[in-house]
Length: 132
Image 1 (cartoon, rainbow, N blue to C red):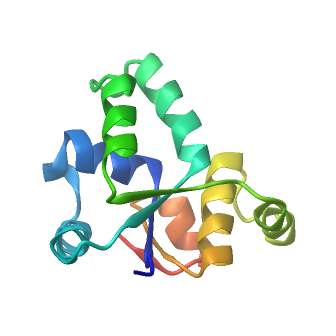
Image 2 (spheres, rainbow, N blue to C red):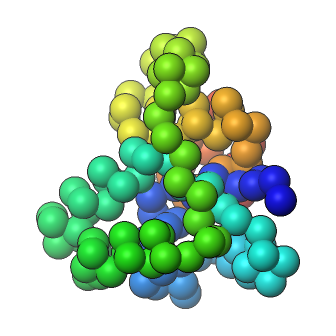
């Protein structure tokens, strides 16, 4: 089954530890995907970001618990950073300054995925279709 959605880091955190913080549309899309057995994509860069936000204390969940869920569930498809994605990052220009945001948006573009995000900079960039 084809994956249609890429989750940004905050959506991963919210879904796994604070689902009430998801937008209504994000919650609907994720519930529909779960019900139909459809996987959702997560960029490898999200794994790096998860370490940082949990170490900083901004997120109460333990990174090991999040990683365990990501690794154990067939619901998640981890997409690696590739030369094609790095090239897309370079071609996007400087609309997004955060390298992690650029990597996630480039991953969504290369794989032709809609991105679930609440990041206003990504939404305003109009570089990728989003569900906010």
